[in-house]
Length: 102
Image 1: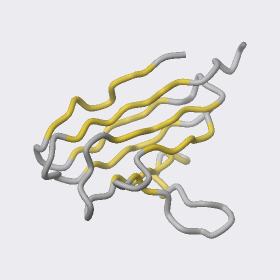
Image 2: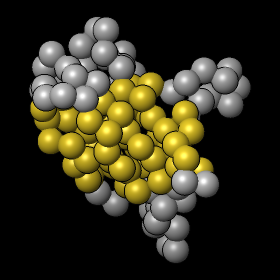
Image 3: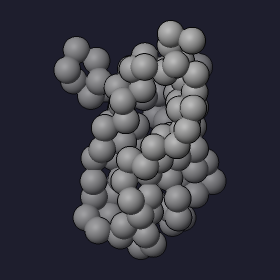
Image 4: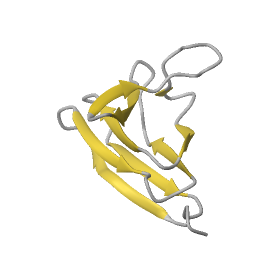
């Protein structure tokens, strides 16, 4: 268990990074220093295609925001984390849970 930096803090152009959670039971994806109108979107790779991660109870897309800067996701999958261009230097991180084999 530990933290993996997916994207060093930057205000540069938008970026899409891979969060490989395939070896873990669960992960926490987080973003630092998001502004009020900024949101990071999460997609799961399914059959080679990125599919928006949505809350199964509401069908609302799961996003990282200034109010919700981190979410726990199921492991055993690969995710794409999309960061928009941000005002402040925003970083993206993945905290890993226990390995699937443990």
